[in-house]
Length: 78
Image 1 (cartoon, helix red, strand yellow):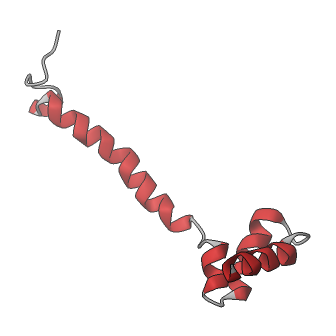
Image 2 (cartoon, one colour):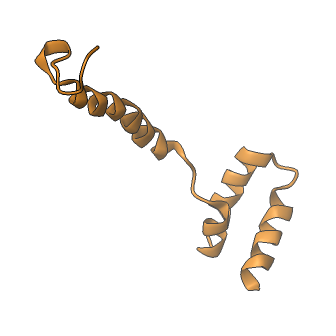
């Protein structure tokens, strides 16, 4: 049974391998986070309606885009 202080591969202690392996999903998440679009609510609040339409069209299709923008604007007023 290996201990966490024992050397694992390449002479690196086993406890350090745990951190190295967790770096892989963290890096992947960091890269993929750049592909997440801005929040349509934030875009409407910032008066960037064309960008909000683009994001909403991608998410829901063209049918409900205008209705959703109107609902967001109404919720921002209250």
